[in-house]
Amino acid sequence: MQSQPTDSSDFANPNFTRSTDAMSGTPSHPAHGTEMLLHEPTIFSSRFIDSMEMNADARTVARYLDLHQEWFHRCAHPMHVEPIGQNSYALIIGHFGAFGYDVEPKIGLDLLPQQEGIYRIETVPVPDEAALGYEVDFQAAMNLVEHPSQADPTAKMTQIQWQLDLQVAIQFPRFIHALPESLVRNTGDRLLRQVVRQVSRRLTHKVQEDFHASLNLSMPKRTRRKLL
Image (cartoon, rainbow, N blue to C red; front, side, top):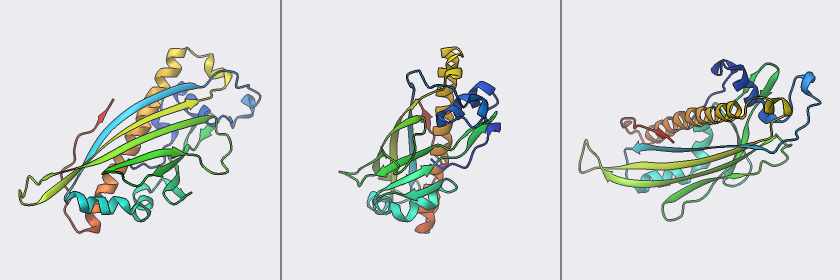
C-alpha cells in the first residue's frame, strides 16, 4: 500500500511511458496540443488480494483502524494527502512522465466506518478538480480474522485480509490509438498492476510498522501477497 514518487526510469518502454502520461488528457508537449480525444475511453482493471499480521487481538486492531485521521497521513507518506471530508482524502500517488508528457495521478478515497467488522474504501470525487482524462473506480474491503499467536498460544494475533478491485477508464489522445490495440491494453494493464503492487505493498508494511510502534509491539513476519 505505501508508495514513493516514481519517475520515468521505472518504465523503459517508450510506448509504455507515453500511454501512462496520456492519462492526464492534457499533453504537455505543444506538438500534440491540438490532438482530439475522439475515441471511447479504454478501460483497464485489476484485482489485488493482500493480508498483514498484527500482534494484537482484533478489538485492539479495530480501535487503531477506526482512528484513520491519526495514522493515514503518516502511513501514506511520501504520497501527498489532503483531507476532503470527515472520512475522505485526496491522494496523489506520485509523478509519472517521459518524452514531454507527465501526470500526477490523484484519487479521492473514502475510508468508510466499519460495518460488522468489515472496512471499505471507495472512490469519491476530488472537489474543484479539473477534468483529468481518466476516471478511477477504487473498491476495497478489509476484514479482521483473530487467531492464536504461533509464538504464544495464550496470546492473540489478527490477520487483516483485504481485496482491492480497481478499474481505470483512460481517454487516450488519437496518436495512442494509432498503436496496436493489444500493445495499448497490455502496457496499460501492466502499468496498473505495477502501481497497485508498489503502492499496496509499501503502504501495508508502513501500517504494520506504525501500529506496532504505537503499542510498543514486535513486528510479525511478513506474509505473501497475490496479484490476480
